[in-house]
Image 1 (cartoon, rainbow, N blue to C red):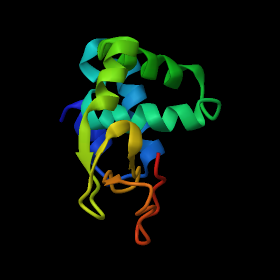
Image 2: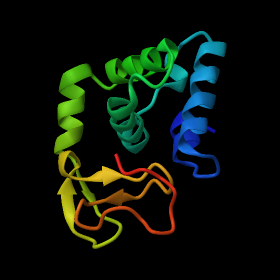
Image 3: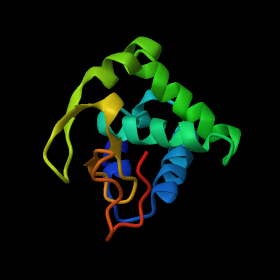
Length: 123
């Protein structure tokens, strides 16, 4: 199972998924094999921006390494211009204008808001 799948698999709470992935990354020598891309990166980076002081430095190092691997600021800005469908209303938004739920990993526009049956956080 690749690292993106570990984050996108909703079997564990989001923080546990991230913690487990950071542990694997450290255990395996901090290589590129466990770095994130796509929706998994979008979720973890957005979550990190809101919770950056809540965890130890290895979490921040992991996020920074993933950020660098997608192309740094240029890669992040390109990602924000990509489009995604809100899983609630079906409208299409740029990623910069939509959130992702850390519980169910569904894209959610801010008009639809949180999912009543989900314990995740929209980031």
